[in-house]
Amino acid sequence: MKKIAVLTSGGDAPGMNAAIRAVVRIADYHGMEVYGVSRGYNGLINGQIEKMTPRSVADIIQRGGTILKTARCEEFKTEEGRAKAVEQIQKYGIEGVIVCGGDGSFRGAQLLSRLGIPTVGLPGTIDNDLAYTEYTLGFDTAVNTAVSAINNIRDTMTSHERVSVVEVMGRRCGDIALYAGIAGGAEVIMVPEIPVSIDYICQRLLAGKERGKLSSIIVLAEGAGHGEEISELVEKGTGLETRPVVLGHVQRGGTPTCRDRILASRMSAHAVKLLSKGVGNRLVGVKGEKIFDMDIDEALAQKRTFSKELYDLAIELAN
Ligand code: ADP
Image (cartoon, rainbow, N blue to C red):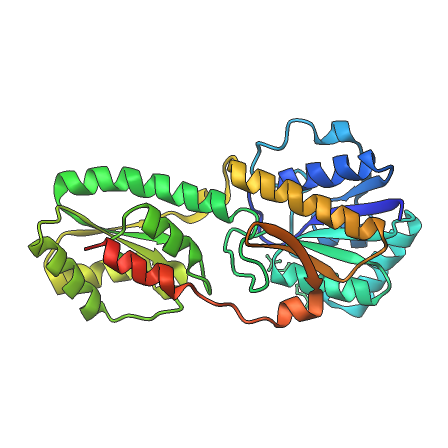
């Protein structure tokens, strides 16, 4: 395969630029041409496709977001939309596509592969909500952003002897809350995978106070409740002054961590290698520091597991 395309789709994640850069440079190194597609699947349908060179990806490895822009595209969910995309792909002589995104984007990649366009997916989402891979691109950066926010919040909470509820992203997946909670020394971590009662939380906070804790931080995944609401209930249940902080989109931006940049570079190299051999319908992931690929259908059928071991560790650490 000599001509491939790359696009970013769904929610943006720090590390997507590092992935684009690696795809372009590694493909070029091996004598392949790369086309950049703007705005996710929209760009495929509308022909927003431009040739990229190693120089067009200069100075982006350290930037969050994605230079190719990302978007959601309802039209790609229709047969007509996908037919238009295939038409454009053929017009440019593109033989394979690399899609960096989340599970929705991978469903699109699966359908594109079925239409005879070998497509490979790179996991780009801060949520770490993809079952087949241990880590996704952007997760490490988002966790580090959340941890540095928690550090700042801790200073002021301790000075005022308050409780803080820090709401982080994660609708179906509590990994950001879990990792940021452990690294930020949270007293309580609330995740969608393990529902807990407000009574239980209040008891733990009061017991902590009894043991001499000067402040408490609850890290809350958005899928486990709303910061404001939980804050009010905790204040009512404990009598301790409690404040909500919703981190929101700050978690989606920022310069990617070293870990995300290296992961993006390694995964992209793997994706280019697959396409160079004409292999499509695969997702690239990492397990035990090893990069691997898996059939898209098989990968999307996997069930996510939540680390109960880390969750239990967090409880002991909050002692
Ligand atoms: P993410 O990739 O982050 O999970 P979305 O679920 O919004 O984000 O999906 C991103 C895009 O992928 C959608 O806007 C659409 O273009 C495409 N997509 C999602 N689901 C499907 C599907 N079932 N069939 C075809 N395309 C899909």
